[in-house]
Length: 110
Image 1 (cartoon, rainbow, N blue to C red):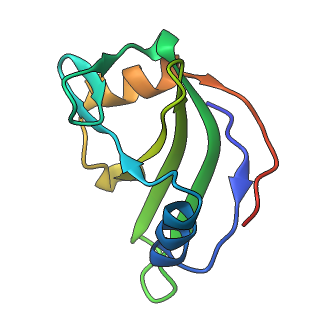
Image 2 (spheres, rainbow, N blue to C red):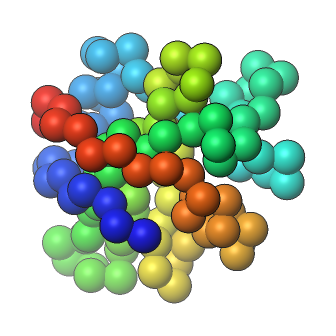
């Protein structure tokens, strides 16, 4: 999966920036798909990854995480965060789901 890499200093900096832009709704994944906890579930076809943030720990290279900024067809913009590599917090179902989501490269303010 190709994703646009965007550098920011910390996860907290990114989350604070998203909060200011009102893009801080957190998506969750379960066997029904992605949800923002409001009873609505999204399929990969209803979602677009509009930005990806990757982080590697300065003191521990295995401390790696990723934030996917996602836009739904109903206009909701939010994110889902995960560790990546061997430390992923989700299983193969999550990985397969995220790989089905269309990626649109956009320039967003960092």
